[in-house]
Length: 438
Image (tube, rainbow, N blue to C red; front, side):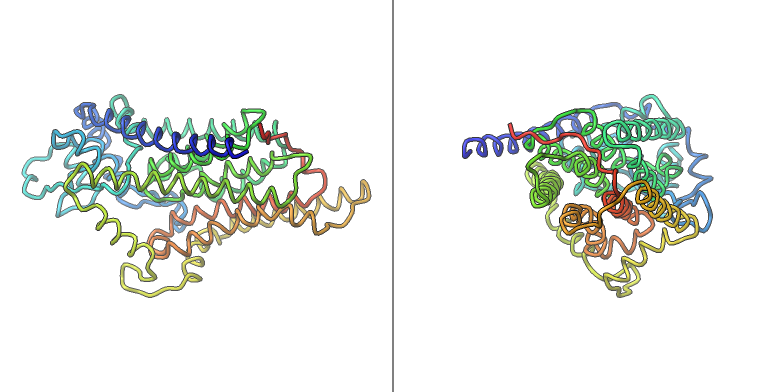
């Protein structure tokens, strides 16, 4: 047993080192690509951004449909900047060009179109506290596609992957569990995600991780932990702190629904839930921290001071206008984004479905009352529902300022609560055999 544990932790260490090395190599190679064609493809799209502006809303009055063209402009500008000529330094510091007299979107358009007479307003800025691993994909796409084409590709890819996920959930788990996914999707806003790079990266990570979990028939317990570890690392690699918990919530949903063992207990299931969450968190934190270490070793920048300052700001209870808020106010502000008529109608429809389903099943055959063991067995679902609330509350400043996209963390809460209710119903517990100790 001791030897098995030693082998497992060697695998964990090797996975962490391998992922960091692979991530660094891929990003280094991405920075070797010529930016000429990329820049011309951004220039082709200037009318799109001139029309939309920084924070356009697809449906006026609904903040959940607001795009983040500011951050997309940051990503595109970082992708097309040829850099200093020192590829290692550029990979670690992720420099870009900004202008001191216009916003991010207009600055991107000016730079991509080589607008004359703007040189005196240009300056280079670095953003090394994130990995910016999305550049591996984005730089490659920009060699062939402009912004509109990337958005259309996003639309097709995200729609296809979601349909694949629905199919696999129906096949492996049961059709009724497509409902929580549809509720989650309603919170995420599928009409918005493809139009914004900022919102897309973690969506891909979460949905692909869940698909991988569903494709394979049997899983060893160690492999399950490693999947959550890798998922957390990839999330940290590509994300700029949007709604990362979706990459924990989607594979966790699949795990909790498929995990079944003849001698299993609610305690073991809860321990697995905690272990999966822990490994996801380790992967997320270690991958992020590795960028800071590499940056401090190979550049002259004081990245740790920058990170410390940013962490203090993001965890504070003070907004951009120096307004003071509480954790409850932050949660309320995020919840208010989805506390509108269409969403309320969905929740009511789902609750009616649950009640009607229970009544129909009760009439068909005698149903025993829910016992304490059943309630204990669904504890992980409550844990999954609470994690996003804790994240939003702890990340006070970030969740307050950026509530119009951080609210998407609540999609995991919706996922957890809806699965919790379905698990309490009779005849909804069809699961595959997931866990093998060997």
